[in-house]
Image (cartoon, rainbow, N blue to C red; front, top):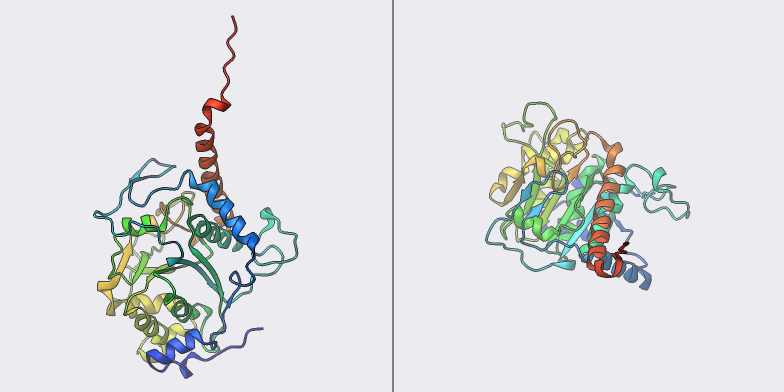
Length: 343
């Protein structure tokens, strides 16, 4: 059982915040990182081999497989070389997720059709990271004793960012639908520059009205966050973590929704607007099967229909694998197609 901690007693300046995040007071468990074996490397190699034939390059236009729409990068491209382990895809959660049907269960009875609703999301994230050679971490955080679980996100991110160029924090109801589309391409498309610290998608309330913060600015959704290692990154994360304790009006968000997302939208981001990239909601919220817009064209977020995450993850895998299989068959067409002519 996790021991709860009180962040207000330990957030004292940048150095102490970093110490809190890194040296055990958070006591996160990097589940996947433990006990790697040679077999893991062989598995990753096999996965990358299967998908290598259809990997999209970092700068070419991308044609959406469902509706045929074309997406282009912003020229000139900034991210032109694969970053590999310079990118980390991370799931942050206070729960162990090790019961039957969950991603870290060791009972040997895993059944995809009976998997718990969060598990397909975690597996999609791991598969995407493996295909592209990125790092993956499942960070199990310690619950705080005075605020909701999502508040563990800022210090957890602070514990990781120093080791990477980019850390992508992604909720379990968010999917990568295009498994062979590199994250470097997405950074180029979204015009993430070297001065961009945080990238988030504009939120929606699924009515015909825009989702606005208390100042009338469109809100961001903190379920999908791209964080870049920048001289101001840890400072930003500290301000975010301390908002309920130090900013007047922010205290009520400790234990009420939208928690850390509300603090970001109403307070923290206004100090860093020049360093924030806000994405069109249609590219990072919703899904193709959702009745209303947006449709999650590049990243899917099943905010109101979490029961469809398994189907979305399944569709992503089927499209990615079958695309690679079809390309392989075409490569070997001369060997596989045999014509028999009858008189």
